[in-house]
Amino acid sequence: MIEQEEELFSSIRIEIDEWFADYEDWEHALNDFDEFLHNLRKDELEARDQITTLKNEIIQIRQQLQKSNLPGIPHYINELVNDGREAVLDSLQALEEQPLDIERVNQSIDKAEKLVGRAVEQTSLLVDQAQLAERVIQYANRYRSTYPLLAAQISEAEAAFLNYDYELALEKSSKALEEIEPGALKRLEEVMTDTTVS
Image 1: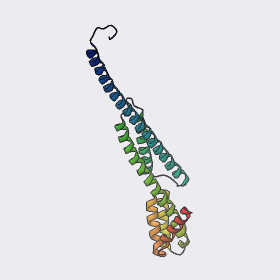
Image 2 (image 1 turned 45 degrees about the vertical axis):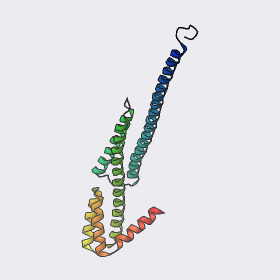
Image 3 (image 1 turned 30 degrees about the vertical axis):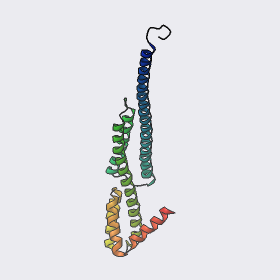
Image 4 (image 1 turned 135 degrees about the vertical axis):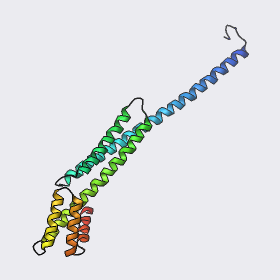
């Protein structure tokens, strides 16, 4: 424009200033968009990590149940584990959707964390109850021949144990044992705790 001398330098200067202003506006918008993409990518990676952690927790629950050598798993535990697994899969599916809705992903991960956490807690409680019930029943067997009432109560506890009702088995066996040998349950719990720690 200067070379062709079509416009005055002052009017060219105004147009150049407008171009620079437009460029700065565009650059700000681009930077904002870059930051948005960076944060979205960061959120996506964090979500993937959380989902991987939850998947691993489900695997650990299953391994814990297998290692425990229980006669069977109560239906409610299987349901809790399946609910947790499905919630994790829903989170993964939300993460794969296009366009990515990170708010939906985070909501589904929150739900999965609650369900998996409950499954972990209940499984751990179940295994502890089952192991203690088994130990109490074994210990109480020494009194079976001497105390017929205890023998009947221990038989009921064994039936509950084989029916996967470990809480009831523990309740019946410990009540029967405590009547014959007060404080025995506490000692057995301490022995099991010491064994677990070491």
